Image (cartoon, rainbow, N blue to C red; front, side, top):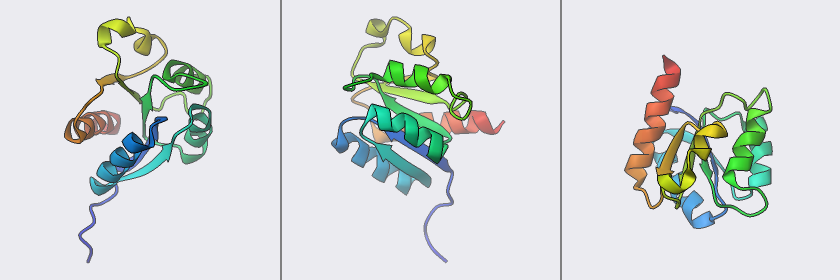
Amino acid sequence: MTDQPAVKGKVLVIDDEPEITDIIEAYMTNAGYTVMVENSSVMGIERAKTFKPDVILLDIMMPYMDGYEVCEEMRKHEITRNIPVLFLTGKDPGDDGGKSWEVGGNMFIKKPFSCERLLDMVNVVMNAMAK
């Protein structure tokens, strides 16, 4: 018998800051999720197609393609179209102007956030999908 929790689902984290992805990966893995990390927005789109996560945690401010563009691109593909996207950002919700919703995002989580809060939000999305 192991003390490892049962796997709850698959999470893809797309953020250009390895310090952030490392923390999220460790915390979410410890909470029972299978986690894949991409530090490139472009590679994140490809990883989403192959990994087929249950939820995507996506930074908005990244080089080459921002999170809005990544989300729009994923909504164009059958395999990634319906995966819930939780935007992680240092932007204020007021500065976003609703753009995260317009491009197909499901939730907006402001940085800095606690890992506990992030886990709560992922659990909310996963529980909603299970119904």
